[in-house]
Image (cartoon, rainbow, N blue to C red; front, side, top):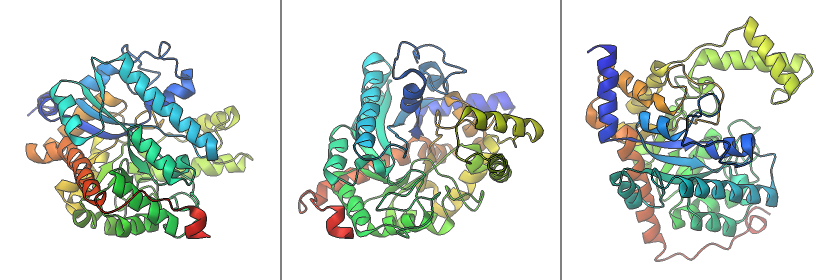
Length: 397
């Protein structure tokens, strides 16, 4: 088959079994760019150059379901983080209300399938970062009632009850309250998302969880040694847990040369007296200068496919998916640079001999199954467990 024939075949497969993607940061991009003024960023029109996501490109990419991230940064803490998360939820609701012919808010696996059957993009929500619940299980429950169907236990920084992958170890995994958060999520039917967390937190959560977990946007650490990725011993536990690891596309998480380039760029910032996490105009200028002298390594769909090949080998075909992290990153593979790119990845996997059945599991069936399994566990637990009223002070002192 020619290259064009392979991509055409990929598009046909995605029409039959679309992508249910684990993570898209469009709501935060809308907040940052236009403070939720949807007239200024009308995703019913072409937003190329401004956003990775609009309705036409979602259709072109074969996206039939999306977990919209209701992320807030860790600079926001306490009640400010809770309020900002509510504003993010409101943004997703506003998008669904504005584009009812294309987007449908859903909360269950059955509703996901019904939206797909109706030709609409099944729209779920995931809260990215445990700081957004402000150490309150009641707040966690409130988010669930508002439609949030996963919580990422940390973002880039530790919470008081869980260690993040990119922070210094404090709890060395989960505290007692962190375990209680996981167990309460199981009781409700909210998926435990282990992207962004430290490897010890992953292992503690797998021990604590009575339901399948997800990694909404994480790739393989064996293929690319970045702490945001998943070690093989954790991937190997997913068949026993029933969970799903959804490979991300972010260049610095999938390409080893990009990990090293990013570290060198951060050293350059520090040498200039700037924080390696600074987003100031001065820092951006330094980074542009560095990139001109040291061009970034380029990833492609083949780079992501390398991760998926390895993740399938370790975890099995029933335990992998995709979570692009669109509108949450600047750097993406050159042929996966917006939401229209999924056929390029599916085409690459076809060339590698992946079967149509396996591709259907990767793009859709595994994600729907893990959501349905979490619902089943919750229905059983709710017969014997009341909502937890534990506090972090009671459990962690």
